[in-house]
Image: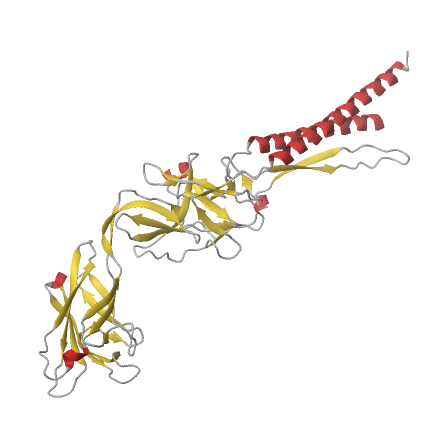
Length: 433
């Protein structure tokens, strides 16, 4: 019984070390595989209680575990949609084969890094068929509220290079100085005109024509102007008219003291904005709050549009996409404007090492990993998203070669046990001769 248990223990040792050798071989073979997580083989003793005065060898058993929570170093690349995770969290992906299905939600798989490039349909995917998923943004670049404990709402990220898009103007901020001398008695009272280009919903160029007409008193200075705004897209119709009164006191002289609406949208004293409506929709024009030296002013004797700030741009061609640290994917157009088109969340699970390992450095949620949750990149327990980067293999080749040597010695020692047991059994057999 004791001799046979020794034989069984030696065989168990051979099998266990063969398993460890397989894990080491896998690790070394994937030393240059981006995103690879090394596998470890751990040994555990088996104890078999024999009778009094005897001992029975139980042997050894082996368990393997993939260390998904170990991270390799990041390396830079030249592709903006080469993505890695700087810290905890994983990218949500799905298989390209699932895109032909009609299910409401795509099957969720996870990766820590990937080289994503658009295919013929504009879908970002790796060469092995892993498709990046994210939440789509609205046309104004905002991302709505989506559930965080389900994949409903996630969809394959699609970008269409050479796609045209326009960016309509919704906000204009005026920084204009009006001449204080124009409101003094004896001045001609001529209107001062300026034109501001804005872009409509179809990317067409339009003009917001503004005229400032001074109120000339019989004596002294009125410090009062009438501002009239006309929209070229509406046949140069008046869309707003306001009476502006400027302060002439020491300290706040030259700043607005009151804005009175004659027609058009209201003036918000808290924000200093006029709510106008042009042919394509609402347009906010900021003229400054009362006593604000950064808005409309009336100083000296010069008419000076010192700063005109606005959003919007003409129709442009999509030329590139980039991902920022918070997971927002921005489309960059050749005429200079950018737009948020997707948000890429990061997936976190309580036990990353409990994930089921799949081909192509992908993983799947399991009962051992616990339920997943979708976080904004850079928030909670997850790290940042890093574009132009890949995560290298977590394998340390020097350490694996050291384990290879010790495994080989252990395997040889177990083989020696089997050889010794065989010789002892031969001696036992020879006792009958």
